[in-house]
Image 1 (cartoon, one colour):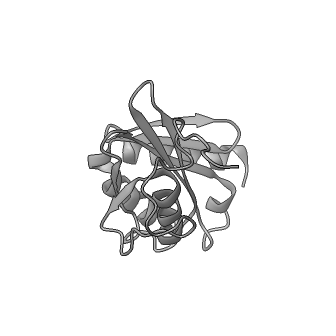
Image 2 (cartoon, rainbow, N blue to C red):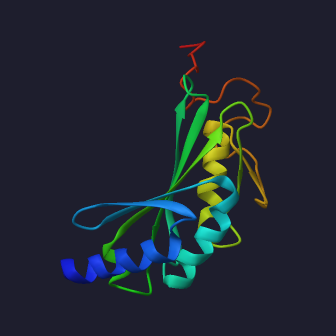
Image 3 (cartoon, rainbow, N blue to C red):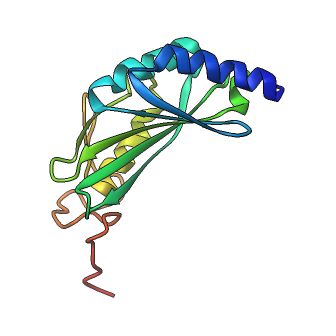
Length: 156
């Protein structure tokens, strides 16, 4: 895929998604879409219909001073080799004190395990997820989640 072809895809996606979400590009092949939580499923469905067919990664970054958590979905394509060359990140900000987001498992089943891991380590409850349950931590774990900035080790 040439730079011109990548720019054409970016232009298509930008016209399709804005003003529903903010779209930014980082040359040569990176696209970042920042959406509000109420537009998350709409944007995800638009991306899926365009050809982005799976989630590669779900991560979250804690910003306690701003009282937000940024959730990032790294999205790609197996079926479209041209789209697979694009690094697409879909981001949302959620209220840290509520720690609730919408699950994208219905759009991309590949998000299921990754959202569950994010639930376990960051404490984000994904509405509509088939199983918000621990993967790594003990099932009765009640303390601050280990990837939160205010987590402190209590035992060595």
